[in-house]
Image (tube, rainbow, N blue to C red; front, side):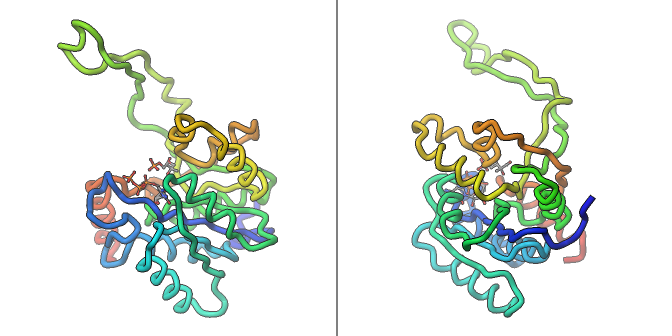
Length: 255
Ligand SMILES: Nc1ccn([C@@H]2O[C@H](COP(=O)(O)OP(=O)(O)OP(=O)(O)O)[C@@H](O)[C@H]2O)c(=O)n1
Ligand SMILES: C[C@](O)(CO)[C@H](O)COP(=O)(O)O
């Protein structure tokens, strides 16, 4: 197994940071929200650069942004000449649009691309490396994932008399052993990911609204998506409780 820190081929990391953070409700674009004194995007940039596998990092920021763009520029200057090239693009209305914008700005010759959420600021470098190693071993698509700990059920809205009892009723229980909670970075052969996004760009609005990660677009091409172990530390900051948990985690680490 190849555990080298550096990938076999030119590799880029796309960091999607153009979301608004509605569920966090902080009153700032989520990537700007402070965690232990630094914006979430800065944590993601440090983690990505620290993993030591990208020759380019391409960050998608909200349209019209100046602050996150300046943060990227400052970070690049601080890293100096040996650092990965850092590009900044305007993201789009959806996460998939933001990924598409970043893919268009990748340097020629990039063979592998990892797509990472700025909203996962504590992702350990080992997760990046596991994804990268699987790509180097020949996968076209790789996702990190963890086992699901809750029981997952499907539900439907109630109707008629049942609606007076509760708004939803259970329609089934998933087989938990077959389920995985999927994280980022997700890694791809760059051409495969481009093709998947080109196809999805033609989907109708209902299908487009149901896109929650990049791997599902590659799945729709019929390409195998391989799974490597994720890490609970790579959790996504989505709600105020997640942010509180991230603060507590960093404080407990002495940071
Ligand atoms: N139009 C969008 C929407 C999301 N993202 C990014 O995709 C990642 C995962 O999205 P999510 O956690 O849902 O972030 P938000 O869209 O900001 O959150 P919310 O849905 O609560 O508004 C985040 O890093 C976010 O910045 C993006 O780049 N462009
Ligand atoms: C890509 C992702 O982080 C994988 O778990 C997730 O699907 C993003 O979902 P969100 O609703 O955009 O937060």
